[in-house]
Length: 137
Image (cartoon, rainbow, N blue to C red; front, top):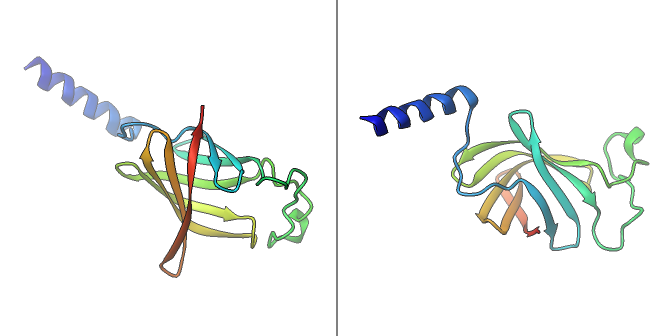
């Protein structure tokens, strides 16, 4: 009886607090295959990712492909690239990704392969492409 009461209480708290059940969390610092570093952290009810360091060799890179001409001179470091990722399924988050290569925002998925590896996929017209990232400890 105590176990049932405890599990019911935990379930009720999670309903109110919008808990996401996962074996691990993608929150942290990640290294992309191209050398870029992305910090994933909570932003309200969602997860967001900020480009901490652009790809290797692009230390002074600017957001030159942004659709908004007023933003084209801003540095890439500090730009939010994972936008409003919500927990969608076990080990999966869905939201949007900003692609600095073309300055556009796409539907995206963050898939947690394990505690040390995630995959970020951007989708357009049902076609998805992505990149694997490794946790930086």
